[in-house]
Amino acid sequence: MNSCEKENRVSRNSITEHRFRSSTLWRLVTAIVTIASLAWVLWLLVGIWPKIDAHKTEIRFEPLLFGLLLSLVASYLAFVVFATFANLLRISTLSRRELAHLYYTSQMLKHIPGRVWGVGYQWAAGRSAGPLGNWVLVNVGHMLLATFFALWSSAVALGFSRSQLWGLLAAVGGGSGYIAAWSLISSRRLLGWVGLLRGRFGKLSSAVVDVFSSTPISVRVKIFLFFSFSWMFYYASWFMNGLAYPPLGAAGGVQLCAYYMLAWFVGYVSLLTPSGLGVRELVFVWLAKDFPGDAVALMAVVGRIGLLAVDLIMGLAFAPFAPRKS
Image 1 (tube, helix red, strand yellow):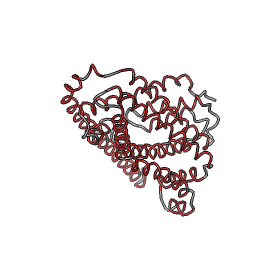
Image 2 (image 1 turned 135 degrees about the horizontal axis):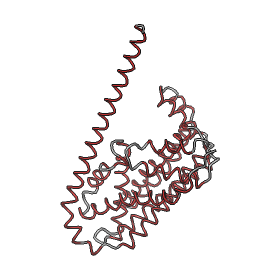
Image 3 (image 1 turned 90 degrees about the vertical axis):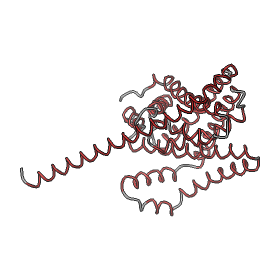
Image 4 (image 1 turned 180 degrees about the vertical axis):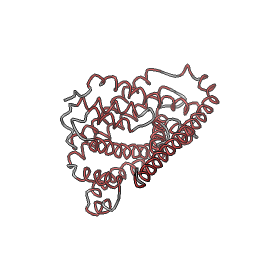
């Protein structure tokens, strides 16, 4: 073995060792954040549990069940947008039921460490319908739009909780922002800016801009309508959750839903815990500090269980429709 080969082997070993240490450190940080967040939330829950227990006879389960049904409708409408992106990227050889299987299986996988497993499963099970890059673009496009509508809906709900004028301004501002974003992403100037980015991030950004810029106006309107109705149904579900707990009330449920969406966003972009576990609840409790502690704790539990239940129910419903291998 010559000196060049020895140097290459040493270099590869060093890279492997560095990656292992980085991965181990990241897992350690993730574990610490998860445990600390959950411990803090549990400590708060223990402190206010007597208040919840005192009002347990007031909890009505019929509105909670109806709220779950509304959440299922909201989830399916969001899936329709995912299927629309799949068609844009010519993943059209799969039926709607097969796409739903891939989408909801990915949704269930996000609740465990490693949310990229969902995209990996979509590609592995549906690779005959499209390459990995297309599946990544479908998920990135859907994620960006879902985030926009989540933040916009929160702004509208919190705006109306303050006054009708603020609510209308938030609604008009978000709608105008939606139109302006499509116009910007279709401009040559943005394409030029994105072209300056380097590496994998630059390639992914260019691919995303290319997909968005070539989206027909009719599809843009369809995405707007389906996502808008999806969030309307989701807020209606929290309206019912508020009705289920009279000390909170329906209006309080809607406002807490807006806070929960902001907390969802923080937990999602934190990339520290599976499905924002602990981080989401931590931010939610902080945002809703002006509400009674028992109502906030109960809605935090209902919100988390509701999301898990929706993904589980829809995942099981479409579990038999895995794409057939060609």
